[in-house]
Image (cartoon, rainbow, N blue to C red):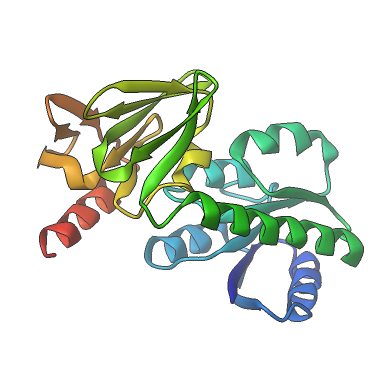
Length: 231
């Protein structure tokens, strides 16, 4: 089953999406809300596979929600305004639906979700390796050897036990390829929590390097480190 959420402050728009989702056999609608803060709080303790996310909402818009999420699910953005389309793909969204949403366009979008989930399953292999291309050549990096990942402009620096790899990618995209022990700690960093030797309120010590922890992520980082310590 694909666990689905809908976040849209327009009641009629939510009702349309709820009806469409009810027609899909492997969809389980877990949350439907017009309050973006309710969604943020829900995601602190729960997981969803797919979210239909409106862009224009009070308090937080769709783009701000995407930037705030630690490990975002698959996202299909919904809006009445086409000018957001190009920007939306910078956040790794699956698709972008213009309101009023027709059933044919809805079905096309969810077919992309199915294809994307199949790709993710293949990429997150049983061998627990991150598959990248470095200098045009395929490279498999064992998860346990990755220390942390840093965003560097339009590139990522992947720091490992043996070397650093520079690849063209985004933190949002690479997060979907990593195991659960990897955690976003800052807008520019993902850390392998299994490699943390010491933690403070502002930094994680991994080998000889200090990985920053911002206020947005410190609570979830602390909880995950506590959970790992109990294993």
